[in-house]
Length: 67
Image 1 (cartoon, helix red, strand yellow):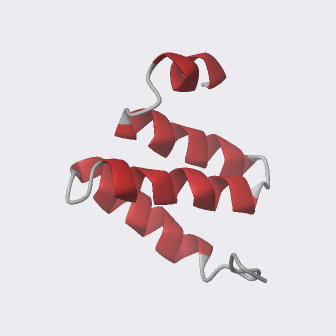
Image 2: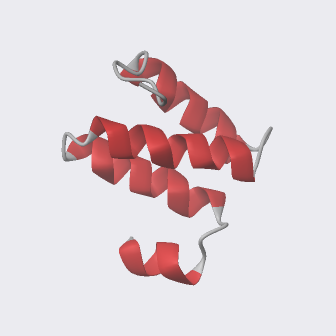
């Protein structure tokens, strides 16, 4: 997935998959960041809908940016 992200950094599906992999590894912050990028890259897309679903399952960010 790291190679895919380097080759196609603006592909929403790559960000979605990267988030899933990070979540499975217990890296919630990285997962959240990947899924947020999908929402920015492709708002309204199927990938964005899936990313939002995963974000909802993950729950609120315990340490929001700026703290």
